[in-house]
Length: 370
Image (cartoon, rainbow, N blue to C red; front, side, top):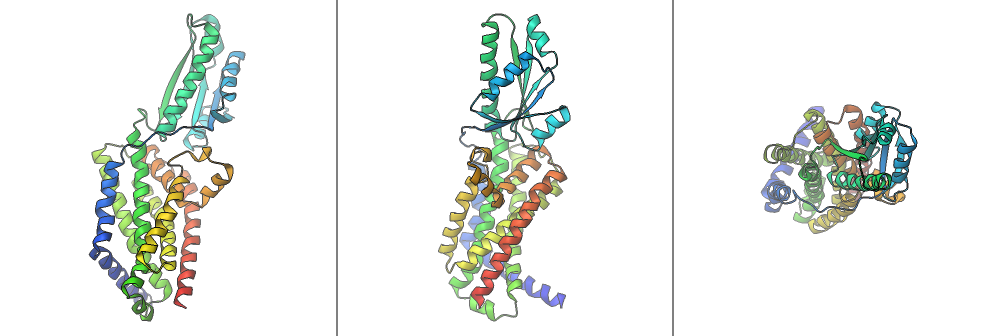
């Protein structure tokens, strides 16, 4: 029974691989287009950053430190301030991306100001978001410089600001953009291939043959899901190799965790693609529908602008977007070496999205067969 099931699914998978590879358009989508885009889109425009959440570690607890922090709290650029009790909590807030920036003030801050030796404020930015990190650090420097001018009248020693960028010390923008482009190109490949799969059968006239075959609807969907998943996963690994070897971006995390995480992310996107394919009668309709999904998915992923800058309703909507978690996993494992707990926090929503989209695609496909 199981052997017959696997044999039927394998036969459909082989047919899907052959049809995909024999189609010149599909070959270009799989091989040429992603690699070309990866090389072309290595640079991107910068964006304005607002609503920055900040972690604060104030060891001084003095009038002077509170005055500096009040300047940040009164700035329209910054939003929420979370005061950490110790270094461990401070680091965790930045590691888990609860905040985008950290402010650390030493316990001798007030004493150094009064003695004229020059106090120091340390700004910690998240280098995984290079654009946001550099702009946020610029805002912080302006605020501290303004306070310093009021304090000293531009005379003598004042406050020195020290900026550190975690996970991407030199704020190399390619590190950020390339790790995100991996997710974007895998999204395009997976979505287009799955969206075309059933629509192509209808257009070339082989869909009726598929219906009268011994395959059940579940077996058809399974056979249509696995090939795009394997192709996109293989392409992702190739792109990772290109990024590491050609662009010298260090891979900080677990490669096994990365592969597993990307597989779950691609599975959620496969469900979307199969649903699109099940409701479209032609390949043109499928491509247009895929493009219609991709634009809002990318806009709501945090790639173009931080999710924190979006209206609250749109922020909640991003939890239904698999691309949001795909980018978080790609960037987090690649640059930071994200641990298993944080990986699971992003995989669980992807599993929920995958179950919903695949179930919806299956029901739609069954209804079409009926």
